[in-house]
Image (cartoon, one colour):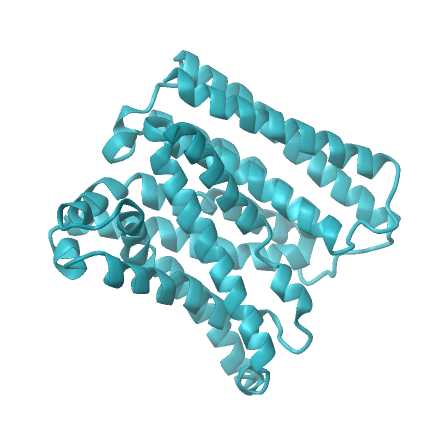
Length: 342
């Protein structure tokens, strides 16, 4: 039962992440920085700390009992993710969304799935199966299928943009954007690794003091994702200072509310993802990552269909997207099955 719950919870987290940008589509006055600053401050700082302090008794004392090296390690992973997010934003402009997300997923998926089986995580993740075990081989097969699905998603995106005569806005060199996107792919594993390699001591400290399972998981994020939060808040703040556009936030309360929904979406995505990893047991670091990423891709595509991004598109791109969805679904199912072999 816990295994099925883990699959569902991690999948819902990925779906929430894939649909992260839907409130941004409704904003007319806000640019990226006006949306991102309040959204990330709310989703990455206010909500995790509010839950931790409200539902983890003696949380500060619990943090003090943890080896500082654990918290530093977690924050370095989250810092990488924060930098990767900024680089992804730049590469989206330089080389377009289809290629950017295709490269990011192509780099991130195998890294996030395989590394926790080679370098064991903390807590229950120390018992993860090896790569050459039946579980490891099944997960490798699912990873290859996911990469095939990612390639088809990217090709479908190219075909759609060509059919709709859409061109990526160019700002700077294509090669530079490509390099940034590859770096962003490596950095995309930051939240997962921050949790996998730090959750044992931090969750243990919170559980010993009477916290519930879910708040204890969020406590890993509240302190361990601090550097990642800092980057995601400081960068848009810098843009608003440079453009002297802070007043846009104050003058548009409706769009500010939409920005807070973006932050809530991200909070739910991470909260569900991390708890899904725990429910999946020793293989949660690898399987949880794979299922989350697969559902994130599917969620993003579903949002595109609903919002009209595919209106007027027919033929090969639609078939490629349909094949990609089927392959990603099968890959996620194989990963779920693989976790039962451990």
